[in-house]
Amino acid sequence: MTVGAEAQDRAQFMLLMRAKGVRDLNLLRALERAPRALFAPQRYGDIAGRDIALPIGCGQTAPPPSIVAAMIEALAVQPHHRVLEIGAGAGYATALIVQLAASVLTLERCQSLALEAATRLEAFGATNVKVAWADALADGAPAGPFDRILINALIEEPWDRFGDRLTEDGVMVAARSVARDGGREQRIVKISRHGDGGFRAEDVGPARAFAPLAAGLSRGL
Image (cartoon, rainbow, N blue to C red; front, side):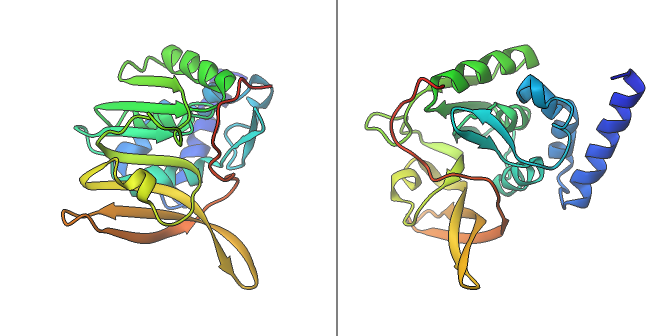
């Protein structure tokens, strides 16, 4: 791909993200600085700029970038925040968050994905991130507290297991499956913690291509 063609594709991608509803300027800048092709399997590099899900190995799928952006925008990450990400995947969401937060700890239960994500993030120049091969559901998983938690998976209510890892005014964003029109639909949910220990859940919008949060470690395929 020529430099001109690459620039044109990047511009089209940014227009698409704006059309999909991304409004946060800092997030838009982060999207522009982190081409998705850098965080996709090489064989999908020519279609990584499309708003589609991509298989990334270990039986996992990376959601479309508009969904990733919507979840991160709902997190409302600030420069002083400490962020926990559950499910590093290919490292694309992580690459966006590291540009917005003070530090990021990302957990990935599949060892091959964790290694690949760490390599990509290092090549990207991220210095405020740690990628750990770890089971977020296991005893001894990092307890925090964290200002923000992003869960790249479907979770069930209640949020007790992860809510206690938030600061008093912390925010967690995940996906969940809800009954709708006689079927099931994935939705993005934002969970805010209050000083009294209570939680408030807010529907943010549609989600796509997420699998249920799984326990246990895997070395990959």
